[in-house]
Image (cartoon, rainbow, N blue to C red; front, side):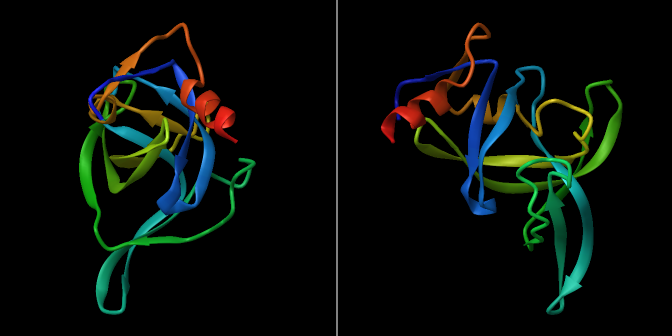
Length: 148
């Protein structure tokens, strides 16, 4: 991919590794790391290895499925929230599908339950080939819908 994609202020994205599709995402150039709303997360020992066990979204979200995810490869990092306060969050690496292409993205597990968008896409992902036009919305989703 050599051209940059124009993405609006929000879009619907797919997370194929997590079996989640058409999720509402806010595009946020003020955030470095992307984030996803989680319901529960904990480190556990499974088959003798430390793993991150978590569920995404929450029971009030229409796409909530109570599915448990287990990641052996994850990180914990200090992330500044929207209030400028630092908090420790779990970070997972997964694929995000936009404009028919998959992009590797780091997502912090964040409590976004009181926010409109369960996913926030930050600069680290956007720097992989996106230009933001805040007057637009759902450009990737519209392109995907036309192909059906």
